[in-house]
Length: 148
Image (cartoon, rainbow, N blue to C red; front, side, top):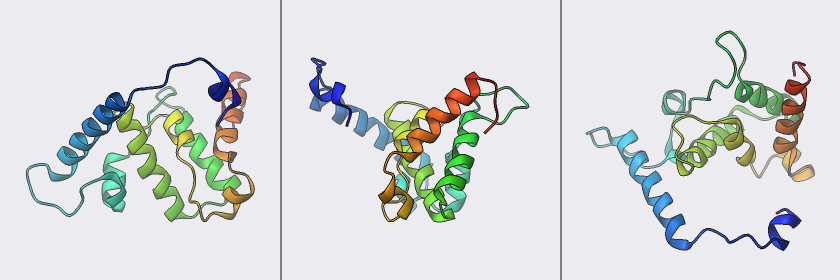
């Protein structure tokens, strides 16, 4: 947690507001997975590979022919943190939940940055904020016109 957030005079979000966002996200997940028929998937955490491919769309924040910021971030995270396919899918599922709570249809780079890699990842234990650092580096390199 940032010092500024702890020491500032900012008023935090009310419990009722948080509960309403969570309930709205649950309703969306329920509609997404049931789609009129019974299923054993009730939330994003239950998604299998097929559902992840179908529902975890990374927002195309670049032009039509460019690699999106989300794709660049995930590529950098996979390489620098040595993430497994399982950790990659966990990040996507968690980012899908974060995007849903934010009311976003697609996963944005900010949602990916909030989704930490697997807690069992040795890279995460050594450097807990690496994914956010990678995102910041991608922003700086993009501003400078460089590719990651």
